[in-house]
Image 1 (cartoon, rainbow, N blue to C red):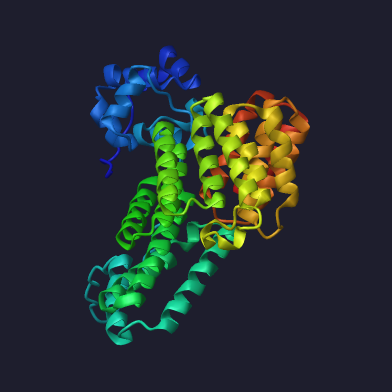
Image 2 (image 1 turned 135 degrees about the vertical axis):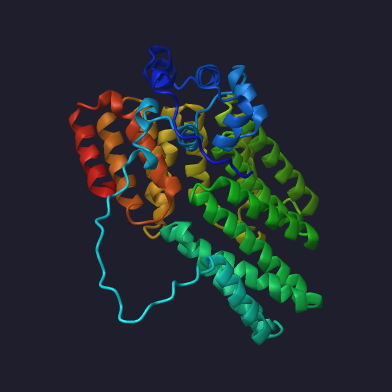
Length: 439
């Protein structure tokens, strides 16, 4: 939803009060929001607009019925309410860093008067105009166009896995616009196939924005992908998109919605063909959501169902949709470990993640960085500080080689959790590596 402009600053006397500082240190957002309302006169509806939440969610937090735990949502609150990052255990926020002062340079006046340039249109508008012109020139789509588009989508997914999805956004969204225009003149089977490509490009656009931690925009593209798949009657692909939306809801601090979306994805898959590999992946997405809710029983049940379905899928991988074939035994292992880690069962999670990380291909840099973070997280929970810093160092090295704000945010959150051990030699060494990497 569109956000209102941020307010300038919270009152200095509020920021200096012991009650406020204690609430921030404990990340007690029920108290934080109540103090913002009483001391700064910012009411829940305004808090919701500033922080990109719904008013009902803010009300539930203030009443103590919900909490905020995910780093991305906490950063959004810090930025929306202008809470200094250090108060919440975060790095300095971008708005806390003073703008660079520019020295005025005098330029000699030209011999002839120069008319001021007209404001240039924004880049997206120029891109849309260019696409309109190209669509007129290109004419109708052909089967060779379809083959080229499918190859391009596969290449985008490979580059996303190797380098992160953030920098892919302009190209993917441009291709989505282009295919949407081709649909206007396509007919019959070719139109159906182009609609499938458009749905995949919309899902990829959503994933790229998700990896960039721009969750509202990601949700918009996932919704578009869902509508395209629905129009085409592709229930299996609808299940795929719903699973992405479930993971997005988990990250965005809405685990109840995440459970609902994962279960609805399973319903859609059952209504299609209920391929066991698809069901295995979907059950683990459900496990992630239950783990975030700290529902151990439901999480373990979902993990067990995922394993059972994977066993049923052995030998049938070639019959599964192409978009789920990434979900192999290595992915099953590491995702099982992550589900346990989200649940807080670090000792149980560590061997699964370590084995998955050992098996992964070296070119899967974004996945390896993400999994190294989770390995470090489980080791830190168990008090294995040396091992945690070693794994965190691997995650950091891989993160600096990709463009994934989602993964780099995880690494920075891991550093914050190391602060109680800030004087220990392994943590000091890791902090130096972070300064070298992030400045």
